[in-house]
Image 1 (cartoon, rainbow, N blue to C red):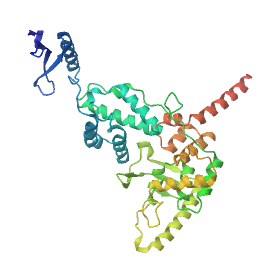
Image 2 (image 1 turned 90 degrees about the horizontal axis):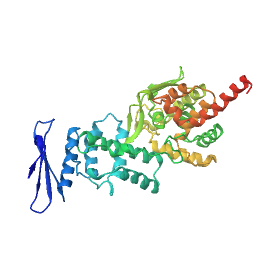
Image 3 (image 1 turned 60 degrees about the vertical axis):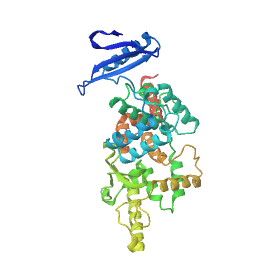
Image 4 (image 1 turned 135 degrees about the vertical axis):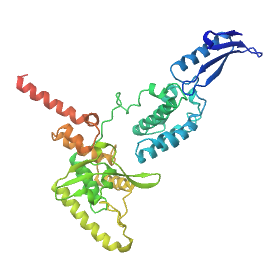
Length: 386
């Protein structure tokens, strides 16, 4: 048996013919002496494994990656790291669902953390595309996996995050992965709103179309957030379904908490809606639940976002507008595009939408910016006689 210098390790041949290289080191975190054996068919192989382990120890990485199955680690991550994070309750619920549906099942979920490679992450993306998952679902699932493995690195289970070495899945048809929004023309939006007239959801759909508010923001509005005299709405929360319950939580980001000016037409619409709600309160009598929401059911309860979505889909079908790629969020996109096409500065539109940065607005609504670039060079060319 040969001893390595500085007590770094020893190498010996075992009775079964295999070679064992044993690494000894001091754990900086606890001060304890730790040992790990590495095995190989030859001395060179065993020593090479030990050397690799020693290099990992030097940089503070685990001497070897954990054999814990990914699914087991996801359960621990969801219970601790995810729950302790500052993410919104709705986001935590979404992350748990995506992890359960797409990451924990075989083949990826049964693989030990130590054996997961970048190619396995890419295979996950390809499999989800084949199964018909949307670009948004694929990209968010990747985000969840990256967060799961970040926590594994932090806690010393693996040396590096293999998901970080894989490019974030791109949106279909775009090499840069940036998602430009599908939008409707003002004529198409008007057709959809007309088709929704007479339904319980007509007012909230018109509000989203006229302000670019998010669905959850509009449904979370309370009467205390509305100043009809000043013509201003204050976004102070968002409504979403979390673990089966409708919950009003804080806005999506710090900049999502904002004031939105509204037109006299929207003010009139909200006044009429308030009168209609007062009549429903009288009719419901003791069955009315005073939640304070601007948009509520006939008994005062918050409106389920899924029901609003279904009502929108039905209105699109009745309107005759091509439904391809059109979702409820399309009303928000259409409002933003309409403002940009009218020449409203990007930073102003970004504030109205509640984006965390102007860059996000520019990425999503690049189609409107492209049109203005043509106008800009035309103006410059006319001035220069070119």
